[in-house]
Image (tube, rainbow, N blue to C red; front, top):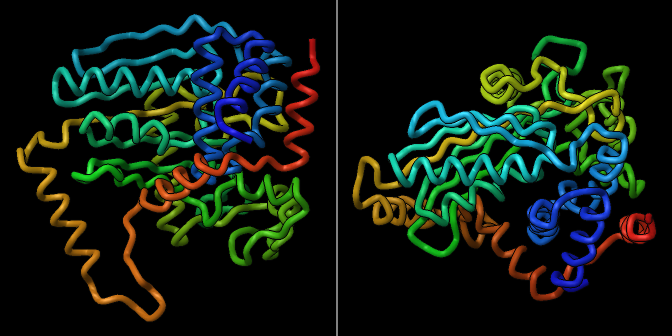
Amino acid sequence: MKTPLLKKQIIKIFKKFGLSKDHALISANALINAELVGAYGHGLSRLKMYCDRISKKVINPKPKIKIKKISSSISHIDANNSIGFVAADLGIKTAIKHAQKTGIGMVAVKNSGHYGLSGYYAEQAVKKNLIAMIYTNAPPAVAPHGALKTLFGTNPICFGTPTGSKVPFILDTSISMINRGKIRVAARNNQTIPAGVALDKFGKPTIDAKKALAGVQLPIAGFRGSGLAWMVDILSGVLTGGNHAGRVKDPFDDFSGPQNIGHLFITFKANLFQKNYNQRIKENIKTIKKLPKIKGVKEIFYPGEGINARYKKNLKKGIVIQKNILEDIKKLNAIK
């Protein structure tokens, strides 16, 4: 399906569920971006979930968002349980404004929800020649090192920087071996997941996506990944006023209340310390790309190049929508 037509449908659905035209557009753009970059677990597969949470009054479609300015560089946002896209959009835009004015911006957000891809927001800052660091927590999926029970979310860590070229460096990675969205998509489509990424509820390795959702996801790099997950939980939960220590509610299964996810956006001018930053980052990338390559590798790519290529390809050919998601869209459109 061509992107403009799909965007109109998504906006129409969000407006039907009470979002303003502007908020519906912000949300639709984020969902469609996820589809275009190939992050399907953060795309249209979540549309019904957002609408369900609005219907059950655990997402506020008409939030009264408050911004508390702490200094000329720092703000604290209470998103009033808005859909996460809207809270994050305001968060990154506020951080960008602060950085453009003072050199650095830091914005904490509380009372938000799942906002899709962190890299989507980092790229907005990078386009303004800013470096971005973004943290957000998530529902329990990963057991802390040495524990038998899940508590940490997949807690993504995101870093973005200008590269002196049209393709930004965007590292957007969860602390788990696989992001939870991919497991959900696999479970919905009756597909298996890779070995070595999850355990079932009995602590046994599994490639069954449904058993993985009921069990434990494994962190990257063992105790180191567990430590990174803990760090993100502190930065995006404890620091911001958001839920933390396993209290973030699962958006698909727990409608007992809002998620109260926290986000932290940090932006700063790339040339803050070195005026020739763009030249230096070009040299850095060029040096690494010139390294001898192992057999079968034609080119060393930096984070963001693959996403950029997929975005261009999918934008040209259109978005392929799974049959079950098409059914969701039809049903949501039929609601009066």
